[in-house]
Length: 362
Image (tube, rainbow, N blue to C red; front, side, top):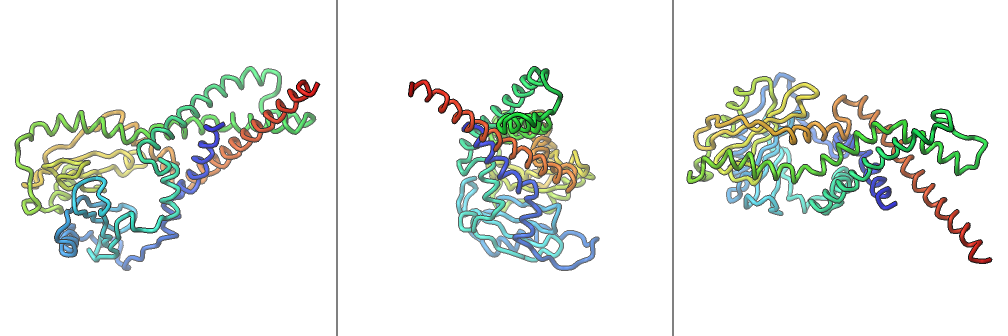
């Protein structure tokens, strides 16, 4: 019963997240200058220069390059610590390098609707413990789906497939409808449940990758001096070098040296493909922060590739709006199934209580 209630929470919060980008864009619109579609992107160094001029005492931590809207987010913080509460972003127009918005630190910003839904859906505001707990709930959900499919076969031997016994009690009719909706959406429920479990394991999986493959790769740089902020080469040049090494791919972010999720000695750039599938598969690239030369194109392990594929599949992000609508319809059916399951559980408990009370009274 407790597991069902948590799953109901996940389905209710997951419904708006399917259209998260559309809703967020509607609630928090950004107006960009009207420019020809073939306008080339502005130089990233110009945006970095503006950011450093505004906050000369802070460190550049990362750059996010939006591939859907003409914006670039430059993130700065007093330290490179991942939990620095003063970390904030500056939003630039990617084609003009004009500063559009100077965002305050996340804790000083009002909670957005999509941000609230995402936090409830992924960790219930408890970060890693919440992620692992919801992952466990998802695993129990997947097991219940498998057991339900196994039990449905023998149960339906006495009835036609999908039959709802209209002449029986309301409770039995509700049970038949509950079973029909459940078995009709079983594959989707299993798919979303399994990918949800994978997504909740993202933090420990990336942690494993960092202390194994990444550590082995960076061990050869031990003893090498970590570049200071003044010694860093052009970030635009690092972008150009990566684009030349991976033609046809889109660079979405750049982590500065010293970033907890990067390298002490390199710019870490993340690039993705341009097809519906490859746009979900990211390739990390290391560029020497001092010289600006390509250092390595990193191969991702299979378990992280599986995570990358499962993440958009969980929210129906592979087929544009039509698939999102289909995902939303399935989600509504799942909510109905969960609510009917709660109803049937309450009715059954009430029936047993009344039944045994007769013997107690006698």
